[in-house]
Length: 460
Figure 1 (cartoon, one colour):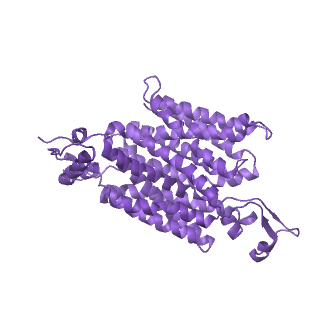
Figure 2 (spheres, helix red, strand yellow):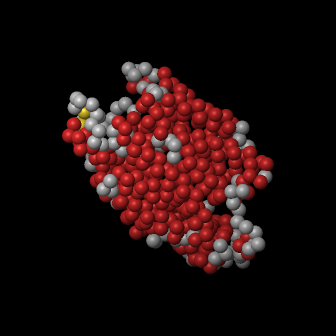
Figure 3 (cartoon, one colour):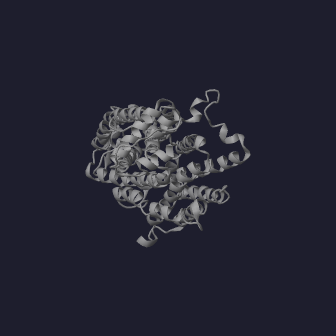
């Protein structure tokens, strides 16, 4: 007797041993993704320096003779003397990465829908590794900046497809768990990158070491099966059944007598695939989409603003970067606890996290420089990071649940594109902060509070 896809997952196992291994592999990939995403935080760090008297030299050769860097690490700043009038180039490289991320999120989602998850994912990872090595070996700033742009395209697109694969290997009841686990591992990856930076102080070697795990992931990725959900959506029933048999055997079950029902939607050739316009045709979906896009805008701006700003906080550079990742770890069990309670749910929990994060940024602006550890601006910034990462995690889950199944992937791709568009401007906040004390946190808390108001009135 033919069964539906969800019934087939129930027979093969929703989250058995084989699926846990597949999920663990793709989740661990987030450590590599985090290293590439946060590369500029340490590779673009500005060490203390002083210039011999006589004014700032007008040419690089003279500047090289008269500038003295104090700290015991190198960066693109020390190699290409990106200080004073050239300092904007560090933020420009970061903005180019996020511009690439925007393109990757827009293009890789539809490509994976058409060509398949596995080939698009492997192609993206291969190019990510290649351009990562170009970044490490770049002979000039121009090549470095261009390579960061292309790393952003393939890194963002590959990460999106791998996230989808993580969801599509398991039963629907485990989607929130695997999604949270993916975001949690990204946070741990930030701390791992800080540890690598502490051990490897030469920026080129750091870029090489951070990129090399991608080669291992690439080779092992060829062993992954294609998504059974994608195969089913394309009408490839026999291949989907083979993958489900593979999952069942990996879960320790005997070979199943499995026959899938034909996917009725596959044969509707006269109906175009759902697109972005479907999100605004219906009044309810239109209002819902506008609010959600703004909350994505706010969360991404605040999250990456605080993450990229970790290098500007007082104290040890590597410790600050590591703590900015590790502080997110408690946020995920909190999310999983509150979102499943009837008295809190998705909407109220996300709203509360956004409000608490906003107050953390407000208080940061008024903390004196000589305040103790318990009331330092660094501690408040870390608290804000934990709160917004919790809200971000809920937003991933909430977005996929608010829309019909046929629109969920479109919405996710569009949401990530909205966030990436905002991130192209994010690094500029760090430069402005140097000119106006507290500007960054002031802007962050305004956007965040307005976002929490939007979340409060979101359609449940």
